[in-house]
Length: 182
Image (cartoon, rainbow, N blue to C red; front, side):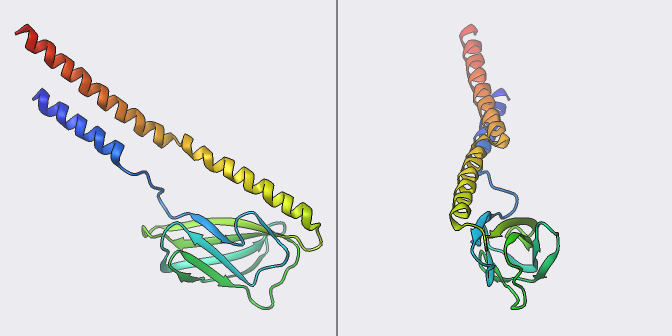
């Protein structure tokens, strides 16, 4: 009985450690303009790249001015695998400012995913300061992404695995002591 319990605990521990950790829904991994980009003029096409294939159901983009909150335009995007894009209407050219790309897509796992990215149209601003701002944002984004190594789920899974291994060791030692006493 104890042997079966030990084997089951060891198997469960190994399965937990071997299971891949994956996000619940697809994430934005790139775009044009990319999150935090500073561009010279308002784009003609807005494009986001997701970590998984986007399903064709219930997808929407809404582009808004961050400062005023005004929605400039919205609509269903075109989908090509992981790339999702929307053409900017010809009558929309709001000029310099900060803008939000809000989206709702159906992830590859079938769940609805909402989120946003931002970009800035520099316009009259000094191009050198805009480029420096973009570089600083990219550096901080890289440092934020390295923080993913500190994900609590990773530590929890590691702890469960270590406890399972320790449990197996204790069972083996206890079994060895029982056999030597007989």
